[in-house]
Image 1 (cartoon, rainbow, N blue to C red):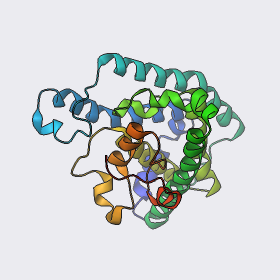
Image 2 (cartoon, one colour):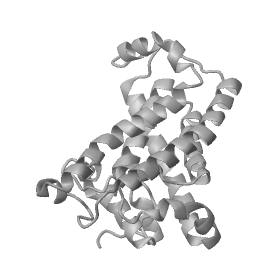
Image 3 (cartoon, rainbow, N blue to C red):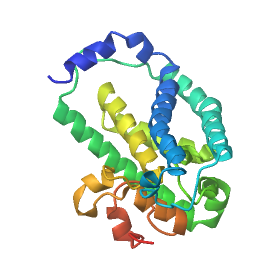
Image 4 (cartoon, rainbow, N blue to C red):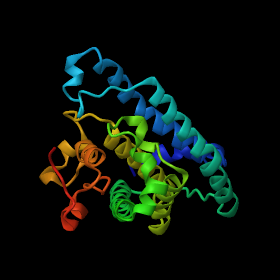
Length: 251
């Protein structure tokens, strides 16, 4: 079993994994770690044309005020709303850590299914919050404060949006009865894809360039959503927007 050594190492630190502080620490540290390389690109793009050529909106530049605002709202949502809920979940649902790791094919298959489920849930939620003016005005409009996306705008949203999408992400591994290692892998992949969606760069190694046939939208897909506001509601894949007639592939 290829994953058993990794899982055995994690079991050796089970007290950390079972701590009520672990979910929020894990979420924040993974998110900020993924944002950091793109923040570095933002700094370099102001001085280096080679970097700026990959920027989706080359005329835009990130400000330190926006960085502070995004970080402040992210930390506020995590500490005030997400942390109490994770503590309650830790109390009501004790963590169970099996001795054996999942097989690699099983882990990959379940991560993909979790992503597909999350993509559908987010598409439906997102479309609804754009089509119903009251929902957009009171809940989703915060996320559209910035029409030019950057990594830290990924989690620039109100409490309702943060908790709703967080609920979808947490519920899917439970529905599929995923192994804890699979659950961790899904969270890491989901956070990475969300950050990449908002990074503001169309890099040669971006996920949408690796997935064939235009099945995956990626950063260009989501940047057009922030620019136009009436298309590309699915976060990752393109099939729901194709079916709904809301797919946009160019400026």
